[in-house]
Length: 116
Image (tube, rainbow, N blue to C red; front, side, top):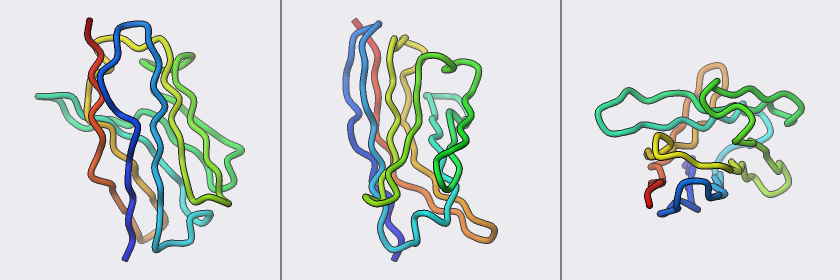
């Protein structure tokens, strides 16, 4: 079955960096547009960034543009999110999502806490 497993979350001070990973299995990874979402307590889940199947096209939420970088390695079936200059408002559970025309798969999330 399809599995998406996020890792790399944790506690970081404001201004710090983290790199999230999403390891995919059970699917043809290169056929899927990949997305990072996040959900803060009391908020709806929001799209943070996405990347095209071959990795040539990316897009970002305005709130993270210039600070976060999404990437993927199709040979390793893995997606990444490099997060720099982290702010307290980036605190959330970050979810990996794989989307194709009729298929939508989610990971269980990894918690990122930005606090001094």
